[in-house]
Length: 62
Image 1: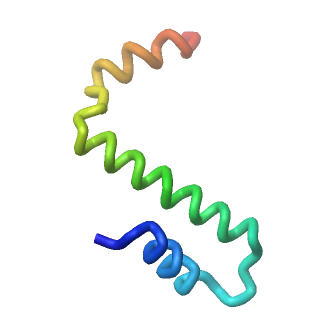
Image 2: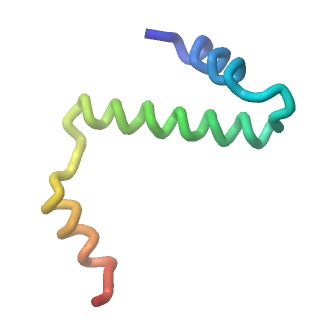
């Protein structure tokens, strides 16, 4: 498993040479969200399809 610093270095090495700071920030943001999602799954912090549909039905207007 890579340390956060190693992950960032790997990410930067994969980006094109002419990428902007905004590009780097975006890719780092996506990487953080993926890590958070994977952590949530491993800790059991997830919703079933039925639970998600029930929650979302409150937001949707038919």
